[in-house]
Structures are given as structure tokens and as C-alpha cells.
Image 1: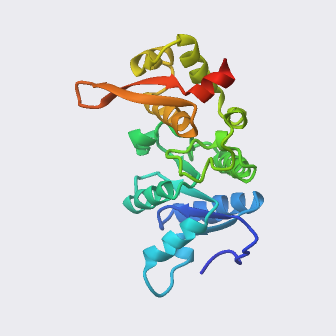
Image 2 (image 1 turned 30 degrees about the horizontal axis):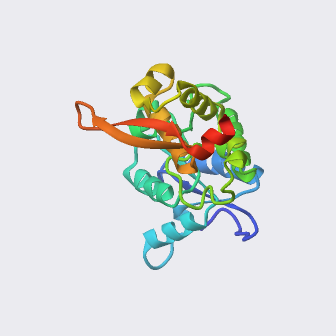
Length: 244
């Protein structure tokens, strides 16, 4: 039975996490109150168990959700399966974990919340972090949640690059300025060298995000020793017009 009375006017935060202690207690004592404080209806999969295909119910709720919250601690296989579904739906996802090692390499470049249960104030800190992230979702602040894959609907509100320029992160603006100032297509290895303080995965996702928004183009020019493609990046004509 759901811990909340469903209100169709509230945005839905769908939670994917293990169904055992201590996570059950984290859900009722931290995640649920944080979601309510941010104005969300909060549910997890066991709140909607009923007759029929269970996964169909999960997919339906995830489709309806405004945001998905994923607890990655322990690398639960069901959690990661449902996380993949959330990414396929193009949903913003708030990922939390007690251990960085539980975040797969493909996701390390995304934003996630780390928490440790050692400090006596850890629960309050995690609650505040979740409220902050959920408020960002409510405000439509996409810079606060880096999308792993950009669903076609995500940036459909405006095709105007100038409008989009005001919404990108500071790091993405630095990438655009670097590519512009380079004066010709830039090899990805040059970008990695210039932005060496950033994890490779994070740079990849930020560049891909810029490409999908129409700021840059990319072209595979070679392969590395492991067979992965090596790319060059350049500003699109429209981006060059507005960046000068």
C-alpha cells in the first residue's frame, strides 16, 4: 500500500531502490519527507504492487513521473534495470549512493549525490540535498541535472540557440569558447588535454549534450587502440553566428 494519498495535481517522484532494510527506513524517514517538502508525490515500485504484470506498472509510473530517484548503493540489478528504463524515457534522474564504486563508469560523469551514514547529521544533509535537487527539477533547471541521453522532447521548447545558450552550464560554455577560439575542428584528445581536470566521461556527455542541442558537430576520424572512435568537434554555423 502506498504511503501517500495520490494527488494527480502533484508531480511524481518515482523511487527505484532495494526493498529491504536499511533502505526501507531511508525511504520512509528521508526520501519520502524530502519529496513531500519539495511538493512531490513520492512512490516506489512496492507502493503500486497489484494484480497483473508488475513491470508494466513500473513502466507506467516511470512514464508518468516528473523525476526518478535512484539509490545505487550495492548495485542492485533491479535498480539498474529500472534506471536504464528511466534513461530511455529521457527522465531527469537523481542518483544517490554511499559508495562511488557503485556508480558505473558510464554514469560517473553525471551528477549524483554521495552520502555516508557515519556523521550524526547525515540524514539531515541528505534530506537537504534531495530537496535542493527536486526543487531544481520543479524549476526546470536542467543545469542542475545532467541528462545522460537527451530525449527528443527535452529541448523541443525552443529551436533558438540564443535561448538555449542561457540555459547551458558554465563548463559547456567553456567548451564552446575553446572550440570557437581554436579556429578549426578540434580533436577530442586536445579537448581532454585542455580540460584534464574533468573526468573523460563527463566531458563526453557534455559534448554530446551540446551536439544534440545544435551547438556543435562531430565527426569520427580514427579509432584508438581499443577500437573506440576518435572524433573532431566544431561549432555549427548557427552557433558560430551567435558566439562570434
